[in-house]
Length: 527
Ligand code: GLC
Ligand code: MG
Image: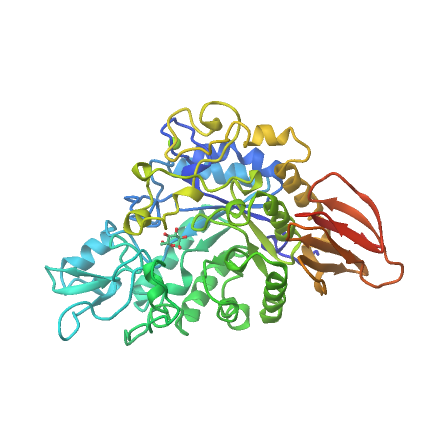
């Protein structure tokens, strides 16, 4: 226990800054708003707060298009306000993790202005420029993750630039040493201001195939799916030499000591774990999104957890994520009843959990009328936009749920008078109370550090044990709508003590057989 780092023993909480707390009435959340809510986060029991981008940006992709890496967007505050936030967070014992967006800049970044100005400009090679294909047209078949081709033609210089996302987000050329030096300096800038680490945006995109070969077509693509599904991004992403770049970022963090490097990575488990790096010199936490992507059934999840545990390199620390600002809300994906089961899963698995703001009140996707749509992806490919999972946090029964005195930039959920922190706080069996209880239980070393052991189960039950120093805790989750039962695992006397039901309505001794109601999860201390 003593030898766990803070990013291993702690719980991470993602704040989408536009939507957490507004302090100045413009309807958009900001840094002073986050600072006002640090007490809430502390009391909830989380340890580290990752804040999505807060840097100057034309907001084409809501801050993931950065035009200055070393400043704060006035919408969110300023550097002095940021320093206040870090100081107050640290005084409370909370870590602050920033979002680092190295794969691309905004097209409004001065670097890109120089780069596009002429083929001879010293910064030309800072971005990915290519001649048209021999017969004209884009250099290859690479596609934008937001739909359409990933190449934009620049009339003036007669070349295309590559953009894995919007045309307003040109990709940097990470094969250029000057780019790498400049971007590593950005990390130093923020670490000098006290930042505890970074979540690195699309880290598996940083290097592309040297020869710019086509991506293979995806044989499984079905009409109506996102455009990007037409290809398998095996040439445009996840190149073997990217691990050298990641190791360099890690080395920069090591200069400051005790910081965390988190990588955003959507890859199958076997490719994902490569991002721990050779001799674990890569990301501390390559984000594991497989609970978001997997079908929600007991056997499939059991296989996933076992496969992930088995794939981890020696010494690699696991992590689990249930939601983020790019994915439908967990309470919408699996329904509000299973959302409670998911909370127990997230907070009892081995490895660092990351929560997404609002999941603790089971906020669901909020329908956003077309006229109010904000996400550019929604405009490119209607129905795929991410606005519904980015709506404001709901704090109380005040106007705009305590989020703002103005008009919120995205709508609140229709049930915000009931679904808010103040109301759920007053209900000892609410999902918020469940999260608090689970977080409190996770302070026990057995959940933070104990070994993971799969438990054979049938039907809709997902079960596993955590073990430490001869102690054993059993987690049994009913992922289905019927009653289920599980014989307590063999070991001395088959009895245990129910520490927590996700319904929060029972506790006490369990003998031989654990019965679970529909959608119930149970945490049992085995005798
Ligand atoms: C990441 C971010 C997403 C953004 C994209 C481009 O996937 O999480 O929100 O749109 O990168 O930066
Ligand atoms: Mg504001």
